[in-house]
Length: 69
Image 1 (cartoon, rainbow, N blue to C red):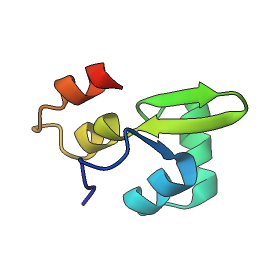
Image 2: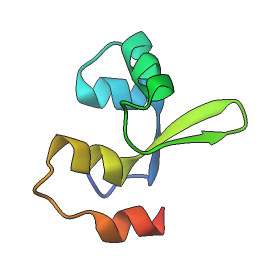
Image 3: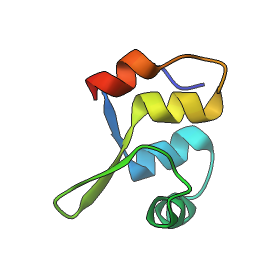
Image 4: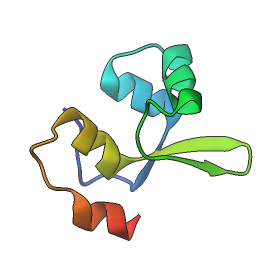
């Protein structure tokens, strides 16, 4: 399970680890739009942690955290 009180953004490799998928798969999902909350900063991609939590547990309301990110 993802700790929803960690940093607001996580790297794509960290998101892959949290999701239990390969790094290359996470990057493929990020580029195709299948990974929610992807943000680009320069050449690097990050994932909004709250969107990742929401993706894994749609019942959980993370709207306040998404607005903060």
